[in-house]
Image (cartoon, rainbow, N blue to C red; front, side, top):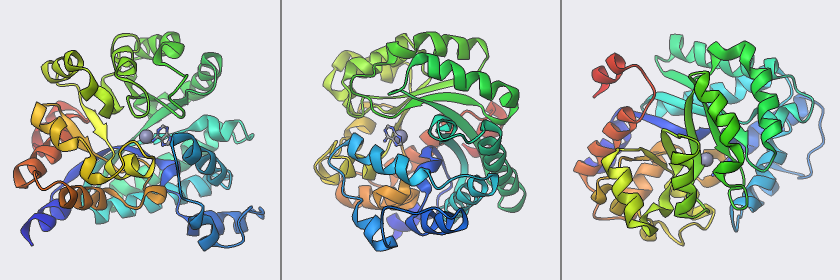
Length: 327
Ligand code: ADE
Ligand code: ZN
């Protein structure tokens, strides 16, 4: 059929992928063996069977545990390289990749180990796969703003290896304003700014991510439709939303894909994009997200497919000349 083929074959950008969320159970087991670590699950199947989430926090507990097998630069390289190969297969030509350094530095892994492994995979992907990719460092919002300042200090010697700053982890009870000072500092450093908001949190978190953090893109943002004034703002300023349909269903933000609001977001004129979030945990990489979403929502057709691909490039942080070539 023409539509699935269009969805799979069209070039696209991925703007919301947590690299630790691309760690497949097979790679978790092989890294555990390489690093002589004992996992609390006897088999790959047993680990995969634990991927039944009721909300964001129930996922984060397993996701941070999975990431604990990452120890050496090689481990970070292998994880990122596996993602980039997968992205290539989905005709992703550009990826802006989140990483969560505090998940690793808290276990004693030096920042340099993390960034060098990820960066080497990105350089190799540019040369060997023709994919461009860049890193966005995320602060964990369940930790303090002081902790965020600490990891920022550790990261600054490697300022040329990441393009921006994000905010992720448990949203409820950790509002954007908790990080307003550190985001202001990152803005002075001319880092690009994004934040998760309105995934489990309310529309108010989206307002605050925009006004108090000066976020340029909102990750998820699906709760914006609860607030008509916010919708007007998002449309007028063409603020991108990086929406992750399979993630939203797995974390019970929507009961089913058929109930997802991505078609309504597009119909309102919001610059929405489709992304995979944590593909190893949520049942699919980028094309799977497009395919399942378009099956579940019959109001989505070829026009919306082109719109989503175009939005993904327009919302990216590449130079305008490069963007012009893609669009
Ligand atoms: N970290 C990884 N995936 C996440 C998500 N969907 N929301 C918040 N933090 C995350
Ligand atoms: Zn996310």
